[in-house]
Length: 120
Image: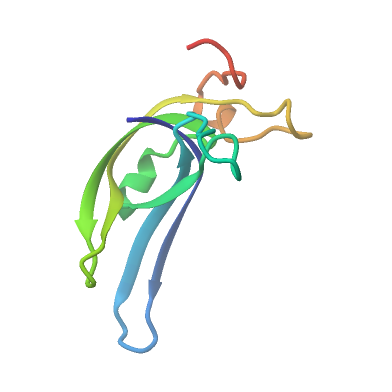
């Protein structure tokens, strides 16, 4: 599914209570589809999902367009949740017109920025 990744973070630390290494990553994204079916909400919903620590290396720019594959998992209480299983960079998105200064890392990664709302 093509999504706009707004931000990404990763962690890698050793727990003090059991001396085990903990690694993980997460992306915050939107599909860009406005959900205006509710009276108390407008605009595009934003969601966050965990991704494998190794997939963080695929994050070339944020914000940016990515193809993300999702998988459904079940937690200890039997409740389903989504995880990102595969992340593929498509292109950077330049939102610099919204805030002062450059946003994202498109130039550093050799990607041509795309203005928000530009035709794809």
